Image (cartoon, rainbow, N blue to C red; front, side, top):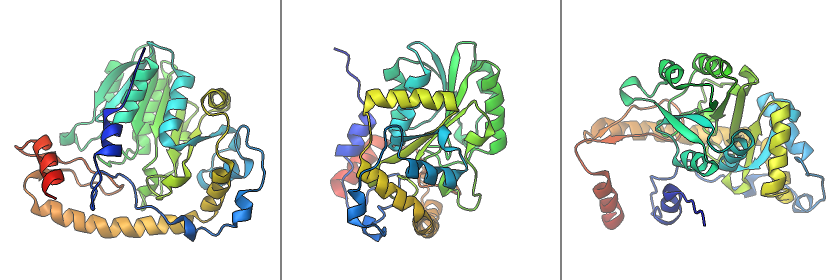
Length: 316
C-alpha cells in the first residue's frame, strides 16, 4: 500500500506545544466572538454546490477577481493540492523554489510530479534568479510554483519579477502557481493579486496566516474560467461541499475584514521592532530581516539546529 506523510506537519502538530511557540507562522487567533453574527443566520439554509454565492462575491470584491474565476477551498494547503491535481499528471515537470514550505513539496511528490528546484539564495536576499528558471524549463514543464511573500524568508516578490516568470511559463504553455497566503501582510505596499497578470497565473490564499481566522478554514483559488471549472469538479471528488455554517461565518468575516487587517498590522508592527532588536543583539543568528510577513529564516552560525531545538524544548 502506498503511504505518504509530511514529517514537518507531524512535528508542527505534535512537537511544538509551549508557552511561547516560535514555530507558529500566522497571527494570533482572531476572536470569532468579535464578529457580528446572529447564530440563527449560521443555521439558515443556502445553496453551495460549487461555491456559496455571497462568499464568492465577498472574495471578488476584496481582490477584484470575477466570481467565475474563484474556487472556494478548505485553507491554502487544500487549495494548492486541488490546483496541482487539476493541472498535473504523474511524471509532469514542476519547477519549485528552494527553500519552500515543506507541505508543498510533499504534495507534489504525492501527485507524482517530477520536481526541479531553483534556488532563492540568502546572499541574494532570497530573490528569484529568473535566468536559473530559463535554464531549467523544458517542453515537459507544466507548472512553476512560488510563494509570495516567500515562505519561509518573508521576502516580497515584485510584480515585475512575476511578470518575467509568467512570460517564461507562457513560452512552454505552463502555469505559474503563486501561493499568496502571506501577501496581505505587505501592508504598506497593498499589492494586488498576481492572478491579474494573465491567464497563465493561478493564485491560492486564505484567511489563515494574516488574519488569524484559521478556524474558518476559508481558502480560495483564482484560475481562468476553464481551469476553475475543472477544479470544482475535483472538489466533487475530495469533499463534495464545504461546511455551510463556516461559509456563512466567512461572509461575515469578509464584511468585517478591515478590523482583522488593522489588528494584524498593529501586532506585527509592534512585534517586528522587538524582533529586530533581538536579532541585532544576537550574533549567533544570521538573517535577512524582511519588511513584511510573519516568518523569517535565520541561519544558526556554527551550531547544531537539532541541539538548539532540543535545548529549547527541554529547558525552556
